[in-house]
Length: 287
Image (cartoon, rainbow, N blue to C red):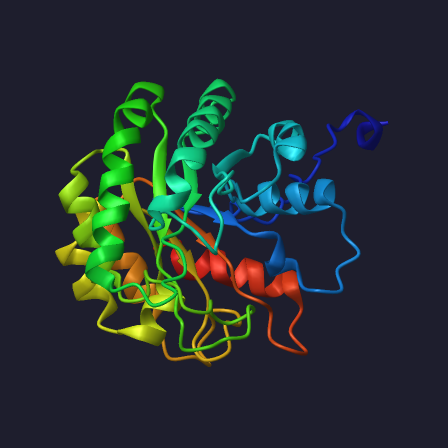
Protein backbone atom coordinates (compact mmCIF):
# COMPACT_ATOMS: atom_id res chain seq x y z
CA UNK A 1 0.00 0.00 0.00
CA UNK A 2 2.89 2.32 0.82
CA UNK A 3 4.26 1.79 -2.67
CA UNK A 4 0.89 2.64 -4.21
CA UNK A 5 0.69 5.91 -2.31
CA UNK A 6 4.07 7.10 -3.37
CA UNK A 7 4.01 10.04 -5.86
CA UNK A 8 5.26 9.06 -9.26
CA UNK A 9 8.15 11.12 -10.56
CA UNK A 10 7.84 11.78 -14.29
CA UNK A 11 11.18 12.55 -15.90
CA UNK A 12 11.22 15.89 -17.73
CA UNK A 13 10.65 15.73 -21.46
CA UNK A 14 13.84 16.53 -23.36
CA UNK A 15 13.80 19.88 -25.11
CA UNK A 16 13.47 19.62 -28.89
CA UNK A 17 16.65 20.35 -30.80
CA UNK A 18 17.08 23.99 -31.67
CA UNK A 19 16.03 24.80 -35.22
CA UNK A 20 18.08 27.58 -36.75
CA UNK A 21 15.97 30.41 -38.16
CA UNK A 22 15.71 30.45 -41.94
CA UNK A 23 18.35 32.49 -43.68
CA UNK A 24 16.62 35.49 -45.18
CA UNK A 25 18.12 37.55 -47.98
CA UNK A 26 19.39 40.99 -47.04
CA UNK A 27 17.54 42.60 -49.98
CA UNK A 28 19.51 45.80 -49.76
CA UNK A 29 19.83 45.77 -53.55
CA UNK A 30 16.58 45.13 -55.40
CA UNK A 31 16.80 42.45 -58.08
CA UNK A 32 14.71 41.60 -61.13
CA UNK A 33 14.68 38.98 -63.87
CA UNK A 34 14.22 38.62 -67.59
CA UNK A 35 12.41 35.57 -68.92
CA UNK A 36 15.53 34.34 -70.72
CA UNK A 37 17.13 33.33 -67.40
CA UNK A 38 14.75 30.35 -67.25
CA UNK A 39 16.41 28.87 -70.33
CA UNK A 40 15.26 28.29 -73.91
CA UNK A 41 13.56 24.97 -73.17
CA UNK A 42 11.71 25.84 -70.00
CA UNK A 43 8.34 24.23 -69.38
CA UNK A 44 7.41 26.86 -66.82
CA UNK A 45 4.54 29.21 -67.54
CA UNK A 46 5.02 32.88 -66.76
CA UNK A 47 2.83 32.33 -63.70
CA UNK A 48 5.28 29.63 -62.57
CA UNK A 49 8.23 31.95 -63.21
CA UNK A 50 6.66 34.67 -61.09
CA UNK A 51 6.00 32.23 -58.26
CA UNK A 52 9.64 31.07 -58.25
CA UNK A 53 10.93 34.64 -58.51
CA UNK A 54 8.84 35.84 -55.57
CA UNK A 55 9.81 32.83 -53.46
CA UNK A 56 13.53 33.55 -53.93
CA UNK A 57 13.18 37.27 -53.23
CA UNK A 58 13.14 39.00 -56.61
CA UNK A 59 11.12 42.19 -56.98
CA UNK A 60 9.85 41.82 -60.55
CA UNK A 61 10.60 41.39 -64.24
CA UNK A 62 11.92 43.56 -67.06
CA UNK A 63 10.34 43.80 -70.51
CA UNK A 64 7.10 41.97 -69.87
CA UNK A 65 4.19 42.76 -72.19
CA UNK A 66 1.39 44.83 -70.61
CA UNK A 67 -1.04 41.93 -71.01
CA UNK A 68 1.01 40.01 -68.43
CA UNK A 69 1.42 42.80 -65.88
CA UNK A 70 -1.55 41.45 -63.85
CA UNK A 71 0.31 38.14 -63.43
CA UNK A 72 3.23 40.01 -61.90
CA UNK A 73 0.94 41.82 -59.48
CA UNK A 74 -0.75 38.54 -58.52
CA UNK A 75 2.57 37.42 -57.06
CA UNK A 76 3.44 40.75 -55.45
CA UNK A 77 5.92 41.63 -58.21
CA UNK A 78 6.35 44.80 -60.22
CA UNK A 79 7.29 45.82 -63.72
CA UNK A 80 10.93 46.72 -63.10
CA UNK A 81 11.37 47.98 -66.68
CA UNK A 82 8.75 48.42 -69.40
CA UNK A 83 9.55 47.69 -73.04
CA UNK A 84 10.57 50.30 -75.60
CA UNK A 85 7.07 50.91 -76.94
CA UNK A 86 7.33 52.64 -80.33
CA UNK A 87 11.14 53.02 -80.25
CA UNK A 88 12.87 50.51 -82.55
CA UNK A 89 16.39 49.08 -82.72
CA UNK A 90 16.67 50.42 -86.26
CA UNK A 91 15.74 54.08 -85.76
CA UNK A 92 16.03 54.43 -82.01
CA UNK A 93 16.28 58.04 -80.83
CA UNK A 94 18.91 59.29 -83.26
CA UNK A 95 17.11 59.48 -86.61
CA UNK A 96 15.56 62.93 -86.97
CA UNK A 97 13.37 61.89 -89.87
CA UNK A 98 11.51 59.51 -87.50
CA UNK A 99 10.99 62.02 -84.68
CA UNK A 100 7.73 63.57 -85.88
CA UNK A 101 6.04 60.17 -85.90
CA UNK A 102 7.82 58.88 -82.82
CA UNK A 103 7.06 61.75 -80.45
CA UNK A 104 3.25 61.41 -80.14
CA UNK A 105 3.49 57.63 -80.01
CA UNK A 106 6.08 57.74 -77.24
CA UNK A 107 4.08 60.29 -75.25
CA UNK A 108 1.07 57.97 -75.44
CA UNK A 109 3.20 55.01 -74.34
CA UNK A 110 4.58 56.98 -71.40
CA UNK A 111 1.02 57.84 -70.36
CA UNK A 112 0.10 54.17 -70.45
CA UNK A 113 3.08 53.26 -68.27
CA UNK A 114 2.32 56.03 -65.80
CA UNK A 115 -1.34 55.07 -65.50
CA UNK A 116 -0.25 51.52 -64.65
CA UNK A 117 2.26 52.61 -62.02
CA UNK A 118 5.27 51.67 -64.14
CA UNK A 119 8.13 54.10 -63.59
CA UNK A 120 10.86 52.91 -66.00
CA UNK A 121 10.81 52.29 -69.76
CA UNK A 122 13.73 51.07 -71.83
CA UNK A 123 14.94 52.87 -74.94
CA UNK A 124 17.75 52.56 -77.50
CA UNK A 125 20.01 54.87 -79.45
CA UNK A 126 19.49 53.27 -82.82
CA UNK A 127 21.58 52.08 -85.76
CA UNK A 128 24.03 54.64 -87.10
CA UNK A 129 23.80 53.74 -90.79
CA UNK A 130 26.86 55.90 -91.46
CA UNK A 131 25.95 58.70 -89.05
CA UNK A 132 28.75 60.03 -86.86
CA UNK A 133 28.45 59.60 -83.10
CA UNK A 134 28.43 63.40 -82.64
CA UNK A 135 25.56 63.91 -85.09
CA UNK A 136 23.66 61.01 -83.54
CA UNK A 137 24.09 62.54 -80.09
CA UNK A 138 22.81 65.92 -81.34
CA UNK A 139 19.67 64.29 -82.76
CA UNK A 140 19.05 62.26 -79.60
CA UNK A 141 19.49 65.31 -77.35
CA UNK A 142 17.12 67.37 -79.48
CA UNK A 143 14.43 64.70 -79.30
CA UNK A 144 14.87 64.02 -75.59
CA UNK A 145 14.65 67.72 -74.81
CA UNK A 146 11.26 67.73 -76.52
CA UNK A 147 9.85 64.94 -74.38
CA UNK A 148 11.68 65.31 -71.06
CA UNK A 149 9.01 67.62 -69.64
CA UNK A 150 6.35 64.99 -70.33
CA UNK A 151 8.51 62.29 -68.72
CA UNK A 152 9.01 64.46 -65.65
CA UNK A 153 5.31 65.29 -65.32
CA UNK A 154 4.32 61.63 -65.65
CA UNK A 155 7.20 60.47 -63.41
CA UNK A 156 8.45 57.90 -65.91
CA UNK A 157 12.18 57.52 -66.52
CA UNK A 158 13.36 56.74 -70.04
CA UNK A 159 16.36 54.43 -69.69
CA UNK A 160 18.65 54.27 -72.75
CA UNK A 161 20.52 50.97 -72.87
CA UNK A 162 24.13 50.59 -73.94
CA UNK A 163 24.82 47.64 -76.27
CA UNK A 164 27.86 46.11 -77.92
CA UNK A 165 28.27 45.99 -81.69
CA UNK A 166 31.28 43.69 -81.52
CA UNK A 167 29.01 40.65 -81.86
CA UNK A 168 26.46 40.58 -84.66
CA UNK A 169 24.44 37.61 -83.39
CA UNK A 170 21.41 39.12 -81.68
CA UNK A 171 21.89 36.83 -78.69
CA UNK A 172 25.24 38.45 -77.95
CA UNK A 173 25.23 41.95 -79.46
CA UNK A 174 23.40 44.46 -81.68
CA UNK A 175 24.49 45.42 -85.17
CA UNK A 176 25.57 49.06 -85.69
CA UNK A 177 24.06 50.44 -82.48
CA UNK A 178 25.36 53.93 -81.76
CA UNK A 179 25.28 53.55 -77.96
CA UNK A 180 28.09 51.03 -77.69
CA UNK A 181 30.68 52.91 -75.65
CA UNK A 182 29.09 53.92 -72.33
CA UNK A 183 30.37 57.49 -72.47
CA UNK A 184 28.16 58.29 -75.46
CA UNK A 185 25.01 57.77 -73.39
CA UNK A 186 26.34 59.52 -70.31
CA UNK A 187 27.17 62.57 -72.39
CA UNK A 188 23.68 62.58 -73.95
CA UNK A 189 22.06 62.39 -70.51
CA UNK A 190 24.27 65.18 -69.16
CA UNK A 191 23.27 67.44 -72.03
CA UNK A 192 19.56 66.72 -71.53
CA UNK A 193 20.00 67.06 -67.76
CA UNK A 194 16.70 65.57 -66.65
CA UNK A 195 16.04 63.27 -63.68
CA UNK A 196 13.86 61.23 -66.03
CA UNK A 197 16.36 60.61 -68.84
CA UNK A 198 18.99 58.12 -67.70
CA UNK A 199 21.09 55.16 -68.82
CA UNK A 200 20.24 51.51 -68.43
CA UNK A 201 23.78 50.30 -67.80
CA UNK A 202 24.14 46.80 -69.22
CA UNK A 203 27.19 45.44 -67.43
CA UNK A 204 27.70 42.61 -69.93
CA UNK A 205 27.73 44.93 -72.95
CA UNK A 206 29.91 47.47 -71.13
CA UNK A 207 32.49 44.81 -70.30
CA UNK A 208 32.62 43.65 -73.94
CA UNK A 209 33.15 47.18 -75.26
CA UNK A 210 35.08 49.03 -72.57
CA UNK A 211 35.67 47.25 -69.25
CA UNK A 212 36.68 49.35 -66.22
CA UNK A 213 33.22 48.72 -64.85
CA UNK A 214 33.33 49.87 -61.24
CA UNK A 215 35.15 53.12 -62.02
CA UNK A 216 32.78 53.87 -64.89
CA UNK A 217 29.79 53.33 -62.62
CA UNK A 218 31.22 55.52 -59.87
CA UNK A 219 32.12 58.33 -62.26
CA UNK A 220 28.69 58.36 -63.91
CA UNK A 221 26.43 57.11 -61.13
CA UNK A 222 24.07 60.09 -61.34
CA UNK A 223 23.15 59.20 -64.92
CA UNK A 224 22.37 55.49 -64.34
CA UNK A 225 18.87 54.35 -63.41
CA UNK A 226 19.00 50.58 -63.92
CA UNK A 227 21.44 47.69 -64.45
CA UNK A 228 21.47 44.44 -66.43
CA UNK A 229 23.74 41.48 -65.69
CA UNK A 230 25.17 38.57 -67.69
CA UNK A 231 28.46 36.74 -67.73
CA UNK A 232 31.42 37.39 -70.00
CA UNK A 233 32.24 35.44 -72.07
CA UNK A 234 29.09 33.97 -73.55
CA UNK A 235 26.38 36.04 -71.83
CA UNK A 236 25.81 33.08 -69.51
CA UNK A 237 25.15 32.93 -65.77
CA UNK A 238 27.18 35.11 -63.45
CA UNK A 239 29.02 32.45 -61.45
CA UNK A 240 32.75 32.12 -60.72
CA UNK A 241 33.57 30.77 -64.20
CA UNK A 242 33.45 34.15 -65.95
CA UNK A 243 35.53 37.30 -65.83
CA UNK A 244 33.22 39.81 -64.13
CA UNK A 245 33.28 39.88 -60.33
CA UNK A 246 29.61 40.67 -59.80
CA UNK A 247 29.95 40.52 -56.03
CA UNK A 248 32.43 43.40 -56.25
CA UNK A 249 30.10 45.36 -58.54
CA UNK A 250 27.17 44.78 -56.19
CA UNK A 251 29.16 46.01 -53.21
CA UNK A 252 30.19 49.12 -55.16
CA UNK A 253 26.52 49.85 -55.89
CA UNK A 254 25.59 49.31 -52.26
CA UNK A 255 28.35 51.67 -51.18
CA UNK A 256 27.07 54.30 -53.63
CA UNK A 257 23.58 54.08 -52.12
CA UNK A 258 21.91 52.67 -55.22
CA UNK A 259 18.14 52.23 -54.78
CA UNK A 260 17.04 51.05 -58.23
CA UNK A 261 16.90 47.58 -59.75
CA UNK A 262 19.53 45.13 -60.96
CA UNK A 263 17.98 42.76 -63.46
CA UNK A 264 19.51 39.48 -64.59
CA UNK A 265 19.52 38.89 -68.34
CA UNK A 266 21.91 35.94 -68.61
CA UNK A 267 21.31 32.71 -70.51
CA UNK A 268 22.08 29.67 -68.33
CA UNK A 269 25.18 27.86 -69.58
CA UNK A 270 24.61 24.45 -71.21
CA UNK A 271 24.15 21.80 -68.56
CA UNK A 272 23.32 24.30 -65.81
CA UNK A 273 19.97 24.12 -64.07
CA UNK A 274 18.25 27.50 -64.63
CA UNK A 275 16.72 27.66 -61.15
CA UNK A 276 20.10 26.94 -59.56
CA UNK A 277 21.61 29.73 -61.68
CA UNK A 278 18.87 32.14 -60.65
CA UNK A 279 19.28 31.35 -56.95
CA UNK A 280 23.06 31.72 -57.17
CA UNK A 281 22.74 35.04 -59.01
CA UNK A 282 20.46 36.36 -56.29
CA UNK A 283 22.94 35.37 -53.59
CA UNK A 284 25.87 36.94 -55.44
CA UNK A 285 24.14 40.32 -55.70
CA UNK A 286 22.66 40.15 -52.19
CA UNK A 287 25.66 41.79 -50.50
